[in-house]
Amino acid sequence: MKTFSTKHSPKILILLTIVGLTSFFSCQEKENTPPPIFTHDVDTGNTPWTKETFDNDSEKFSFAVHSDLTGGERPRIYEVAIAQLNLMRPELIVNVGDLIEGGAPDSASWDQQWDSFDARTEAAKAPVFYTGGNHDLTGNFAQGIWKERYGKNYYHFIYKNTLFLVLDSEDHGKERNDEIEKIRNEGIRVLDEQGREAYAQTEYANLPERSFGNISEDQMNYFLEVLQKNPDVKWTFLMMHKPMWENPENVRFFELEQALEGRNYTVFNGHTHTFRYLERNGMDYINLATTGGVQNNSLGRSMDHFLWVTVDEEGVSIANLLMEGILDKTGHIPSDGDTLVFEKK
Image 1 (tube, one colour):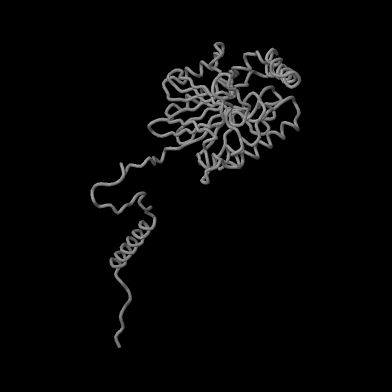
Image 2 (spheres, rainbow, N blue to C red):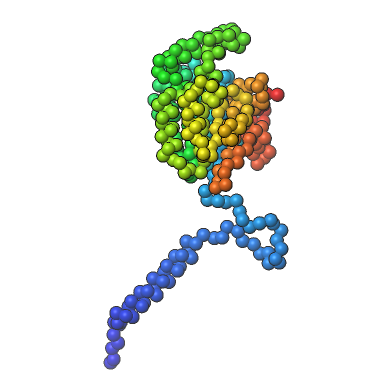
């Protein structure tokens, strides 16, 4: 009986191995190749659409900006805003401060207010980046609560080569913080007991720091260093609560503006509860109105809204979205918001 050897020469084994690996990787490549993003069965030459270059740049992203909740927060507005943002699906959300009412030093009250804000904010699908306002950060007591809960009261981050600078416009220095806190507490007492006309005559209502804010030398130097280390980002966004450029004596902020020369940037702020647009240094400075705060239409339009900002390689586009116009698939304002009033006429 003849027997046959199952042995192969080394050359044949190598060849079989190569063929096997080629077949394996070919199958793997087919399995891992994503399907085309667009297919069709039109073969007539002409097509019933305009182009096949889609607005889907991998570096493009959109984020939302919301504004003040305070001065007498109007119930349920902020909850509706979060529900609407969850429909819109931004990649991230930032705000411009005045997130809680604050008040006189009372640790239990402050923690309860922050707990309430945090719980409602946690419902957002996107991460939310906090900016402190005067209600959140006036005085060393308030700043201590912030630092205990959230860490830094000014900071920066980079997302898809886009730089975000989050400023603390209540950074007056420890001694001045104490003075302003006492003056503010007295002003709020007058407001609560005697009303807005009496409050308008108080020392706090007429403080330059109340209207314009300030930053410390340490904060200025921090952001100057951040800008120096990140010269090649696509865009730079500044988030702050108060319009610090309106104070002609705010030299530190002006030095920060000088460091921004030569780069593309946009500034967002709140505080006035009125929407205002300004072109300054050839750039957009946008003062948001409210996202649940008391409305003030004495200076211009006051409405509940948020900004929708899209960044791509070509630049930035900004849309103002009125909360009363963002409806769910059933044609209603989400979170049972149809009965709410979103703009003071």
